[in-house]
Image (cartoon, rainbow, N blue to C red):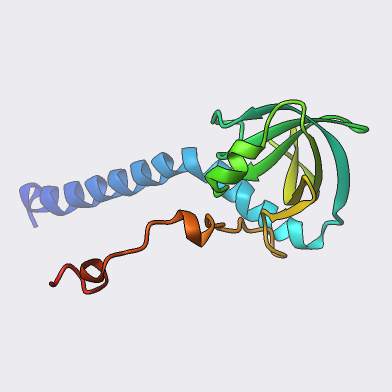
Length: 163
């Protein structure tokens, strides 16, 4: 085989290796948080839960690389100020009920992730109302607003747009 005949297969292999390597390194940016979440979910089931009562100091939905996505409550508690991660599936009704200065009770586990302590909320108790956040395996629960607040689909929408 000539040098010219070897060039195309070798070039193709090198090109393929470069594409695979760049795709893997591009995923590494997101994998640190997703692997932390996977580890967190695995630990959640075996870690003992605590219940804290405190006052909401701040309600924040800011997202950064060092912080989990979703809603966070900074809570003054007997353990100090805790960053309680309550996820991203809160109903608008519950989000509006969470305000600075309000008393809250949080059931969850404290985990250290990327050097920061989080209280991973399993359940909130707000004004006597229990609000589920994570299931027994540590996965976020998708909550829905009350049925009365949701617009009901028309018969046409139920039929896929056929009238």
